[in-house]
Length: 354
Image (cartoon, rainbow, N blue to C red; front, side, top):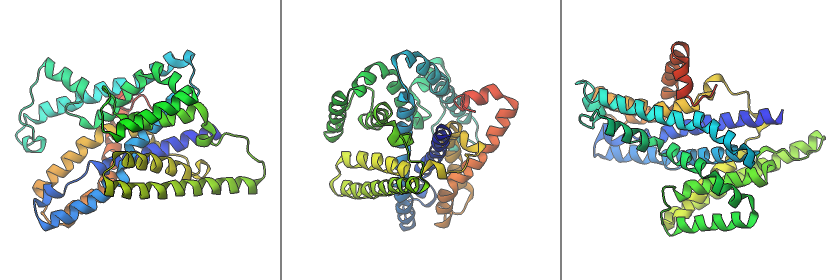
């Protein structure tokens, strides 16, 4: 029962994080209003959501991914874990990047789409296609998946380091130092490694903190008190994240923003009891497809809308606030069509997730 609650909670959080990511990529003030006082008003309102609430989404994804990869991890399961991620991460990464590339190639050659694409005529050749697939050239929101693939490949290095408490502490301190001095690691982002490794460490050492799988009292009153304590701890961490964020704004100290996002995602997880969540709906299980398709839909809706809708303050604001739900509805229709007509393609585009 608890395992089912845990996976249901993962689905809920992945769904909510997917909606937040859409807000991060939906800024449209200057597109509709140009350089004007109205644009400044809309810009500030949108960025308060996107730069505040929306910025916990990708760290949350890294933390979920890190925890799930190292949950019940042993050396004997490394091949199994990698094999599953080939289907759920690598193949969709290749497919989506290729589809975005082909979309830009075709769209840049259609007269009525040229202005929407806004990149001139995209070359159609093998070198450009390979670069687009490997380096997510025309699908830059997949930088997250590129980082995740590298982190998954680092498992033989990360596991022994994170398994031992002292090496884990030293490693995380080193990562925080790298973030503080604004140094760059080869290939992998230090902040991504912090989110991923922090959650992985919990999976290896304290899974009961995340899944509440420790021995629990059969007394209902005691169980309710424990849930209340967990919720209060979560709310306290969210409050602490807000304070750290304000400190980061005043000092421009990068670790403040990293710590804020880490605390906010972890605090939100603690503040929402798994037992209180209703069963996730079918459309909430299609988060990979939603993440993959959302940028194309957001870009098309905003750019097409800017050409046909009046340039008044209410238009970009309304589109911004409703964009996650608009994209969710359109993605749901496309997803149902794909599942019905080309189920194999749909499975690949959704990371093999059912």
